Image (tube, rainbow, N blue to C red; front, side):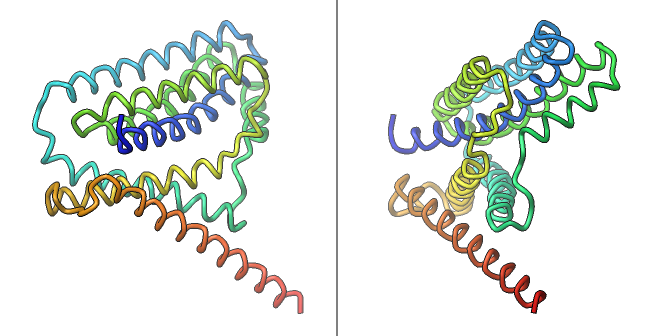
Length: 247
């Protein structure tokens, strides 16, 4: 695998891990309420659905079709995903919005389950895993659309799922210590980098970048650095406003 493939695998791993952590929190809340068997069957049904979608997509992408015309669309899609992830990560790092709290989500799901019957609990677990899984599927489709990219992307998503499952089964409690916002910051920067790279390729052709795939590292450094500077600026600005209000 080259640097480009490793970048795709890492981006898919980090993205899917964040989504699977959120899905695990919902399944855990259902499990401690109505039992692991019911929660597990719901999660398995949702995972099978997502796996079928990924398999069908991978089959279509492996047919050797000319994907050149999709580069621009895939690039724009990744730009939208990356912008959303990085903007939220910057806002949370700056204190503008609260950090995502897996323990709070766990408690909220438990409260919702206290008013539901067993069938409704099964549906809550199924829906939670399916919705988070669809996010993973969209990322896999976007990152894996280029020839030869689906293998590393699919592998990264699978490793993310296995890692969360192993950690979840070992702890049997919400994964509150996962640095979720830091991961979203890195993933947002990576998705913006791939999105910029493929969008320009879609407009100007494969020879648009003089440094070829190594350009991705430069783009990542630019987006990550800009995000860090933005979060620090917003944090200082918020602190100055609080001091001015206190005065």
